[in-house]
Length: 235
View 1 (cartoon, rainbow, N blue to C red):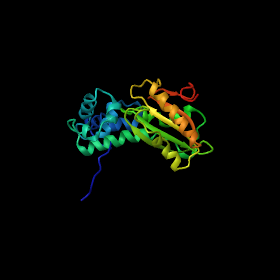
View 2: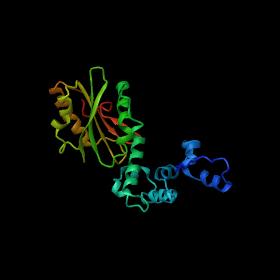
View 3: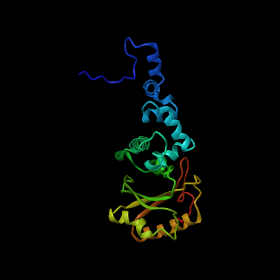
View 4: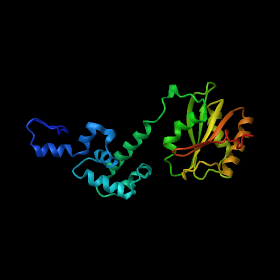
């Protein structure tokens, strides 16, 4: 038995109707110019199947057209949309996460020379988070990034965050320097009084441990604030 493989490209002898049908498929348009495709078309190509366009539209409608909310959603929530199975929900989640990973830095070239250098490494992903996350970026003596470690999820304030937990990764890995990072899901990077109090406590702890706390950054999707540059908690 000879197996045949479906193709996105019109084959010799294909009828005009078949050619039009193929060219109407999002996957075909992606082969021509993926950058020009709309979000529904890109989603439809990931979804696949006979009702890919209708399913993509339904998924977007369920999340009010917000691709960021689709990325944030658990696969079980995606699977609540008609036409999306659990396996398909996982594929969608994986595809969106791959898009995020495309912006990951190449480790051997990651050197921090300014607050913006640190922010750009995490901004694309942390700016999408729907809860506050507190992380620390560890650096060596040449300001090369050696790791980014998640410390806490939830409301980041000086009353709830244990300074010992913040400093632990740097102590365990004998890192000479570190940068603290946390996001504001509100997309307003203005440091709160709790942010300043937390910074002040971290600065004091870092001095006792002979670790350089280079900065504390508040991250949003398109903006960030350096508390060091504003003189908040470091004076």
